[in-house]
Image (tube, rainbow, N blue to C red; front, side, top):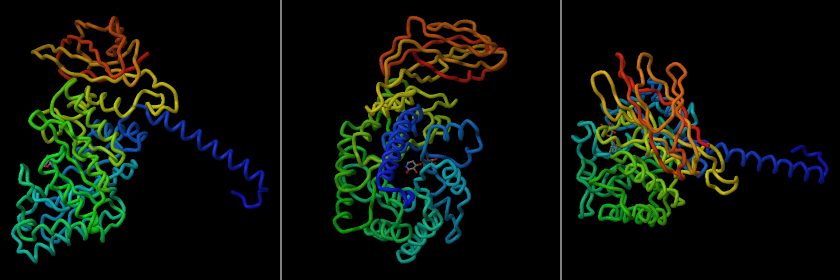
Length: 451
Ligand code: XIL
């Protein structure tokens, strides 16, 4: 502010500034809920991230979806010990650098994954004696963190150091077996000394509910906080399927860790399944994070089912054609994301009518296939929807049901008929039969607009 302004003018200037700031904040919260995972999460003070593999960044649908939807990334394999130091003291950062510079270019947070882990560990490490192993561990942490210093939001310093089951014991690993329990504390102390600005996390799976394994991690974190061992966050991998469902005490478990004075993060979320069941499970995980103030963000373990580490379980939010699945709509709606409005924040009126779409091929034969598009209402009830779809040239749609199409070349504009009224978050679908005429490619999903 200019120093020479008289006091009253300065006051007027200050309140004009304040008004402008308030307007910007309101405008931001309106656009922030505009229908992507990242922006909807940001409106709730969270990030929404995904695991990324460097070798897919050149695929336009992959990086297009990444850039549109996510505001944080975790390198899926590129920062692990076997990728960064496969030979002792020779460091390779090319693939991880590609991900970090992509993320930085787009203003995305980066979670560093992971420094000390028994898996994807080169055999030269497991072969070392205790003294040498301690030196190698501290050197590895130092070199990798130094390389990315200032660029990492949070590091998974130690990954999966506890055993499954009821013992509550540490998992056997070269680190545990040769250095004893103290290796975890030592890794965190080294990490803090290298990059004091990165949040330091302990990360594990099967710790998502209250159980013997999470109790053991809880006791360790409590002890670290009591003794001043540097730890800032606990990551809950959250890999779920029918044998390992979302626990009913998921939120309570996140909360008890947060109450120890650490942030909590959902770090590797994927939930096997499909349709409404999968969507509801995803919604429950997002709800739990939103209900815990110190849950700072969620990361799904991949963008598309096509490249998931457990692809056959179709555990992600986008199908193998990058179409949004019902789970995507459920996550977005739970985050308060809509086609506009205030995202449920209560400061900008009711959420606007909005919808999302997901595509599935329901049957396939020699010269034809059936497709189905699921339409899901956003955070407000809707009274009608319009979906655009582009079919590969040559294909002919011989039948279409539960929707009313108009055609412009290969582009179909499909309107709701009897099925336009949907409650907030509810779904309906329309279907069609396609004659392939030589092309089996799926139609490209366009927009969904709601009234
Ligand atoms: C997985 C990757 O997704 C796979 O590509 C790789 O082959 C094995 O590791 N817990 C973790 C992640 O902390 O690093 C693992 O990632 C999944 C389980």
